[in-house]
Image (cartoon, rainbow, N blue to C red; front, side, top):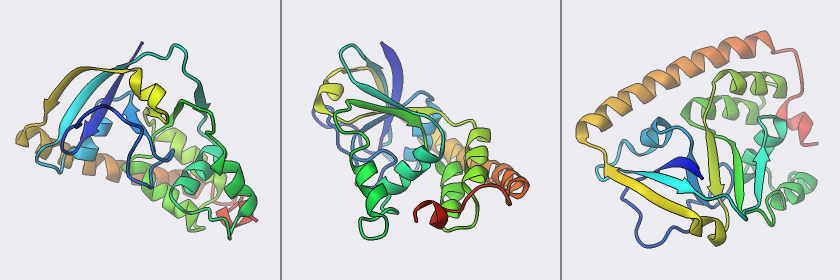
Length: 205
């Protein structure tokens, strides 16, 4: 059993299902994290924000562990619509099938501190080495994404509670502080590695 956390804007209605908004790190699925604060910061702007403590029974589940490297970054790029079939047909085919037959995708979270660094990489401002070094330094949590109904059925809700208005205000402030600290750290690392590695357009050719 693995203890995980999930944040919902308005609470979960009905059974847990492998659905989410279209553009998420690892595609559509049910997202859970190892760190409680990370999902809290995603929902703290919503009045009915609800936190869930969960247990995942990994027995008989096929889990794909995605390390924090350039492959991870390109998979996230694919799921966010940055790798199109017209622009990069070979990479598009590779990442279309990346999690075929997988119940759980496990890997690092592209949280609000990481978004800025990823966008700079996708926009051709920093190299792959600068990207990976920056992401490693941000010490992000791990997410487990249930991609199949079989995986969702292996999730049990242990506890749930709504965030108070005081908690939400504190989280909004803390989230912005963490974001600024992350951007500052990433900028420093990117400067140190600006002449090393390849840019996004070079990798996708």
